[in-house]
Length: 387
Image (cartoon, rainbow, N blue to C red; front, side, top):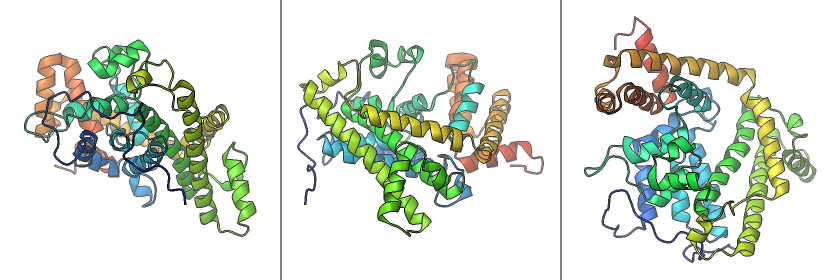
């Protein structure tokens, strides 16, 4: 049986050593630097809070719907498979995958849209930048520094996209967005593993919620062919297992295409090392043209048939009101904040005036879980709740 490449022997173009951390530390005794990154992420409060943050459906709507935590674990599993096949650094990939959603607001993308609108006059809000903010400063666990003090390579991977106006103030991790170069292969593949995971698992959750149905999926590129194959080879299979078989094959098809296409790209270019990878103008980890087209078709289908479904829209509309009303109230009267975020507000307000004050409120709201945001909104608006 082909067990695939074993961990340990890394390609010349893989990340093998780190450029270092923002604050120098002695090397770990029994772990690699990227294992240390992973472990710090797993122990972070922001990581644990992902359990109660929305992916598409609110956590209380059902026990089996994805949350930001289960999504992050699924991204990690997919990314490690791809990394091992391409002989890249699995520990680094795992760290990036586990950290990539740490900055997400409660209520998923609806929460981000609402908070970005609230912050439009104060620098905006983007969850990707917020994830970097979490690991660089918002986590407060260590005696010698704020944040988690992750390696440059982990921070590079977390920052998937960045506008020029933000990149200019981010130093080393922002430089590639100014120069038009690429991150490591580990960062590239984790970004696409994220897309594979959320497209495939949103299909599963949409079917579980009854917002999608198998007959409609029969006409969707890639998914329809897989569903037809499952039905042909397993006639009479019950609906739940038909869905499971379809989703697992959907993931496998995308992963296999990504690996074979990326292998061909790497063989054609033969980058000498990770610096040669970073110097390129286009990524080397990619889908084939055919799979890329099917992937975009699936995203288009999910946008119109799941994310814009009236039941999802009702939830997102309520969620946006919660975020916007919390922001307005807390910005107008910071005395309503608990002591620790109020202290942070004072520090940021002293440094950046009104913009710092707004950023501190946004940090507080972004760190909330869905259920905490709902409870805090109720505490601040319902006169029957005194505390």
